[in-house]
Length: 297
Image (tube, rainbow, N blue to C red; front, side, top):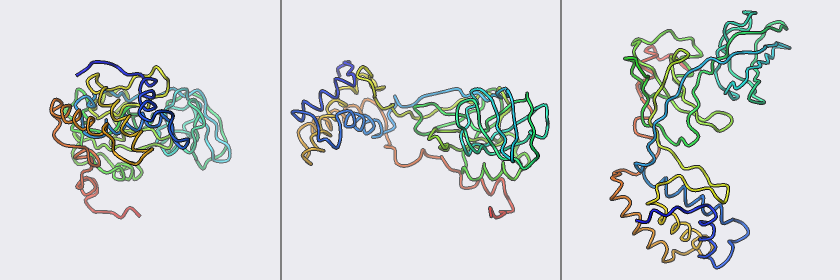
């Protein structure tokens, strides 16, 4: 297949060429292109969507903390937390600030707040450790997690199990060589990896995941897909454009389906993506960590 690369501008031109002009005012050429890009990527777990990344746990240095009317404001440049995240505060000069808390607000990248029912005070020093790892910007679904250079096994479980164990201050699990993990969205819409027990600062976590190409924005943006998929993407842009305007499947659909059949055969993918990645939830994790089945209420 052709190794030609199409820019965002070229793909928008293809949409308008198929329509003989600009789309209906309720949509745009750019929207149609990005819809086509997302649809093509999501059709299957294409081999090119598999990525590997190394995440590292780290403690961030706190500049200052202040507590006023039970609201603690932490100044910690590049803290990386959002509202609802768990965070551990340690080694502040005034130890009354130390502990594990839920972030209440995160107005910017340098400050966040949490609630603590204690008297007003200010202090400096210490560290802030986010108890979740930010996943790559192109993350779509998780395939595997490995903790580097340890015999620890990483197993998936329900997010509620991790949050419950953390809030209950559950002691180390029955098997000290197991780390449980789950994926969630934070308040800002970013993907986070939750782990319990949370690895010590400086630990490397290797993940394999399926990526989703980011939406195109600038005219010179190029889709993050292999060159061999470019002609199929262009054809799908044209097909979607006509389908949205005329509510019918034109000849571009036939050509697109023929191209995709060849791409599937060459890719070697055998199973389309339906729902979460296989093994994303372990139904036995809660029983394993909570053998007494204590009610979450």
